Amino acid sequence: MPSVESNVLGLSGKTAIVTGAGRGIGQATARLLKTLGVNIVAVDRKFESATHDKTHHSKIVRLVADVADQNSPDAVVKRCVEEFGTVDILVNSAAVNLGGALLDFKDQEWDRVMAVNLKGYRNFSRAVATLMIKKKIKGRIVNISSVDGIMAEPGILSYSASKGAIIVFTKCLAIELAPYHIRVNSIAPGWCDTPGGTGRLSAKSRKKVIKKIPLRYIAPPDEIARAIAFLASDLARYLTGSIVVVDGGLTSDISIPGLTY
Figure 1 (cartoon, rainbow, N blue to C red):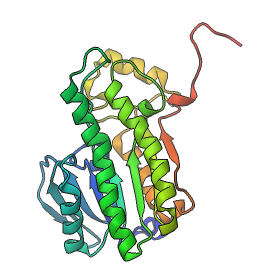
Figure 2 (cartoon, rainbow, N blue to C red; figure 1 turned 90 degrees about the horizontal axis):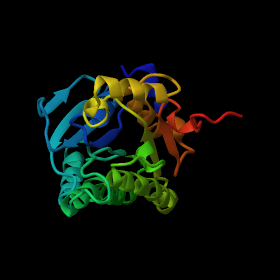
Figure 3 (cartoon, rainbow, N blue to C red; figure 1 turned 180 degrees about the vertical axis):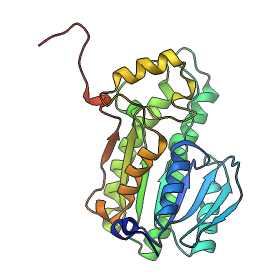
């Protein structure tokens, strides 16, 4: 039987497409939603596990695809409908972080970041929304942004620009799709224990990062996944166009060293 949590959340029996599901936040989200009774089509360029994974509650199908490929969204949606008959939830989580500061990055690095982090979100949202509108599905779209889309950090210009764009993209899409009862929200994670997050930090740098976080720890991916599951659930049915910051208080602390009040 579905768990009490899945009944309260209204997720049991739903179907979700999760991009960037091969690792990190996307992987954690796919796993969590599956435990809540959601059938999953997981999309990434690489998977280390089997193609199919089925429990008595739900099923996960893993598709190898590049979200930057303009043909991927329609192909993924088609496969999802073939497997499960519908798409109720889209989680846009695929992302890359290439290049550096303005004077350092190469044009192809900038283009790749925008193709994955922004164009991929647009194309998957369009393909899924088209199906939802056609089938009159009260769907949910959750876009993964970042605190780097809210505040400036040197050396990651293209990544920050793409994540900032996702925030405005989310708000615009929420307005456009509201008449069809499709909710669109975004999660802005702070530091997270993923290969692309803390994976690049030395032990010394990690300690410095933790000192900047009011809750004094770096979130594992499943903590971000819980916030995503909330936005995809019935508990968040009056939320659309919202940006939920999940950062342990990082962006709330505006204290300046040496300044006292």
